[in-house]
Picture 1 (cartoon, rainbow, N blue to C red):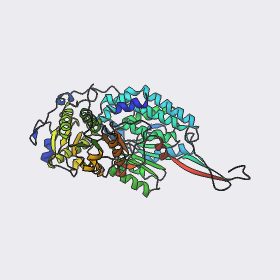
Picture 2 (picture 1 turned 90 degrees about the vertical axis):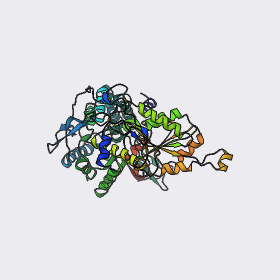
Picture 3 (picture 1 turned 180 degrees about the vertical axis):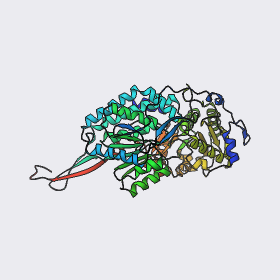
Picture 4 (picture 1 turned 135 degrees about the vertical axis):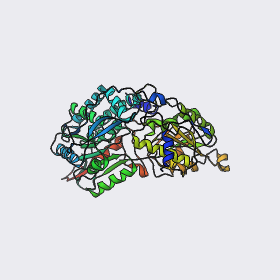
Length: 552
């Protein structure tokens, strides 16, 4: 499937009182700030869950080509977010398991065939792996939705094709990585070599386990590195499954090692390991700081970080409001709102604010919430009870801050971690719901105006400094969205917004070749595209003298 087609699929597809939290945990049809709060018609359907069409095959660590128990013998449960019930018990990794995995990766890099294999042969293994993913895509999509709670249609039609495309992309890069010949000021021949960095430690999050696996593993393998990957404790199952597929594709023993476990007991030992040459992490900004410190305090290994966001989505007055509403809705609610680049601050021009608000509220009420394995469901549960309660606390914070709760705000059903699609209006920049990363189905709609001056009117230009200033007034800088029909407005905003990605009249377009990463506290470095290869390469200069050169 072409990259453009895949990206278009994706592009469509504080703590309250105990009594306040208790009221939020109940499904409700109440009135807040004089507004009627919709009960949502999907709550009953949530109780009748479909049995996922997949078996659990792999629950142990993958170390040195073998699926093995944890050194301690411990396991931990991984849960079905639809019900809170245990799916399987998974090997619980700790420092000893990380040591075993790093030793295997080090031996595979120093003594094994992978770094010495021709780039073309590495490319062929990556392509065989992509073919196997396609062959097993139905099982992988079901497993991803079961463990994550995301709609099956999203997993099957968007994420699995993108996973395949990403490995095709990096397979294509494997034999195109090369250095330069550099002219020198004297009689010397100078060349640069781009060498694999060594053993790469990688820590992936729970919201897009397979896609994040590809973002990390693809470029590292294309460059000839070996890997120790730690899965998120919430979602270990699909990474272990595709680890087995890599073995079937012919990946040499010890090149890819996968350990499941918790951050403090498995992630921290990986980040601080003295024999790991590089660490890559996707997750929260708070944890990213810890990873950076551990890397610095150990062997000063280089670090790439893809962290949190609070992305602005700016709706100007000149566009089609119905299209703006639908795009802003997708930008926030996609993947249950559990997306680091979610358009979670919706800035709407004052001239169209009321119309936008009413239509955004109506769209949220129409959103279909339920069992992600049922056809037509747009939104499944939040990932776990911790995230579920966190989102509800932020909703309560918004109410207590005097934002207007337009719809949603409560739990759906009596089991699992389903939350009503929630919309707040009259949101102010200083409210927690406008500043913090909620990571849930909560849309905050803020009003802005253009403050036209006489000069602006005479020149037919717009002063958009207000919304630029407010959009940039955040510690994050991962992404932004702009909706306008005016090319001058678009050009001004795209250059002024301090974010790693700015989508104009689209959102969440994730082609394999498009780099992704953040400004400010949203991270260091870039994932995807040619830029991601730099994360896994060292540059070496080689200088040799020339004797009687014919030319310089």
